[in-house]
Image (cartoon, rainbow, N blue to C red; front, side, top):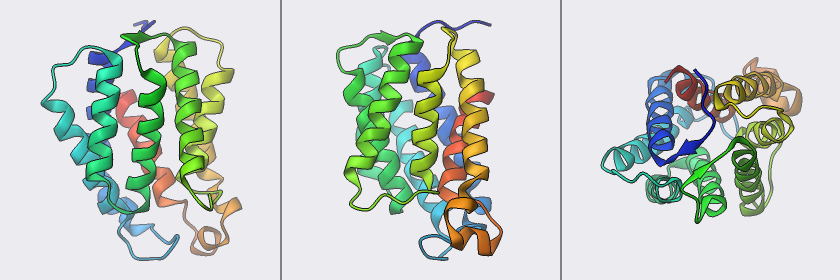
Length: 200
């Protein structure tokens, strides 16, 4: 199947699928949570944030991309829990700002929106830390920009490969992860969101 544009209906269904998938990985993410402190709550915080987004989107019948993007961002901001939830909300807020005025997007426009989203996250943090969820967001945006495809199915496969690779490299960037022998929990949570979208 070839998908050449992303509209509000597709974005809503994709985000709900991604949010549901990450909720199912809650325990796994809690187990490997060691940064910034080993308090075992990243999975819970991300799951609660994802649940708030999914619940809000399920109630909507909006079909414009910009409307759905704004709904997702608003839900994430209101429902954000923990560092990862806050970062995800800023990512969605940046995406929504880039989507303003658009009924749908093509792949190149989507890549530009991901770049804006990642940049918004970095601007929102006083001290961005490499090897966390923000690294995955940035690398996914870079891959989208570099990808030479108009098909969202192909594009998502490329983004997943890059996201998984970036996640595997998080211990190289954060000594705490290397000592514990795990990848960053928030980074893996973002990968799981993409996997949920891919599975959908």
